[in-house]
Amino acid sequence: MLRLIRLNSQSWFFLGFWACVGLLSTGYYFQFVQKLEPCPLCISQRIAILMIGLCFLCAALHNPGQTGTRRYAIFGTVLALCGGAVSLRHIWIQHLPPDKVPECGPGLDYIMNNFPLSETIKLLLSGTGDCAKVDWTFLGLSMPTWTLFAFLVLASISLLQYWNYQAKEQQHQD
Image (cartoon, helix red, strand yellow):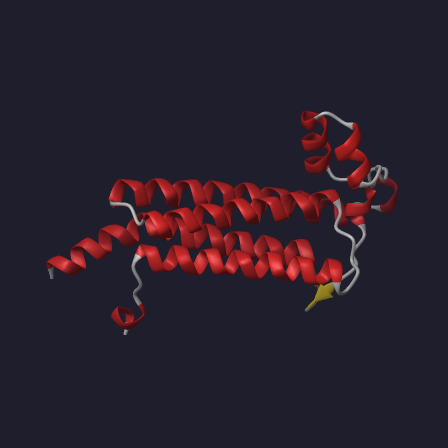
């Protein structure tokens, strides 16, 4: 049964890429159709998903040998875990008592136009009071919680390719 669903690393990286496209499309749907304005941590998570998607696309198009596949797998996993860390911070901020929530900061457009890049990145990753607001839930879980789950799935897809290439080589020997 498992042999029927076994895919090579290139196919898994393409699937991971399309998952990232779906996640980004969902984020833009919520922003432009549902009119939910993303907070700085939401933007940071989108950037992480974009970077993971680009890593997966490069891996799929490049279709390297075992060493290259393992490098892409590790890089994709690290990116996904970094995105997951941002999601965890976002979830933590959402669960703070109201008196402990950080102050709301200036808008993202203002930050991008008036602060140096290093300060902009710091503000994007630290979160503001805007990040504490829960605008949407599904099955009782907020968007950052679902995004954390997505990051963990993407990290798993990526990390499994570290061993999938070797399994593919052994399969050819059988």
